Structures are given as structure tokens and as C-alpha cells.
Length: 83
Image (cartoon, rainbow, N blue to C red; front, side, top):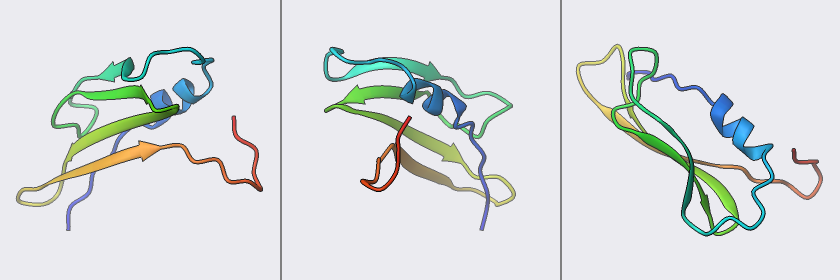
């Protein structure tokens, strides 16, 4: 089954920013593929419809071939405190 690693810190740091008033679709930061991550293409953290969203395309390791596409979104549950 393969595995992949990625750094969630840029996403968490973006959540801590005051982004009020940003236009929809604004790219906040971009991470490029490197030997230190499993990204197969650039990954952007975007302000979209009042949410912070990151799409990741990850190349799987320890497997013959394969990629995984995931999307991160922060969801604040009513019973918890956000950032």
C-alpha cells in the first residue's frame, strides 16, 4: 500500500493569520515539490469561500507507483475552540 508524508505547518500557520477581506481565490502560500516532501506538483493554500483550503497531490513511497490527491480544510466544531 504505499505511504506519503507532507508538512502541515504552513497550513496551520495560515489559519492563524487575519485573512478578513481577502478576495475569493487568493493564493496565500505555495509549496513546491522537493526531495523533502512527497508532492508531485505545486500545492497552494487558498482562501476560498471564507475557508482556508489546500489541495495536495502526493507521490506514494515504498510502492511501485501511485499518487494520492487530498484536500485539507479546517473545520471548527461547535464544542471546540478554533485558533
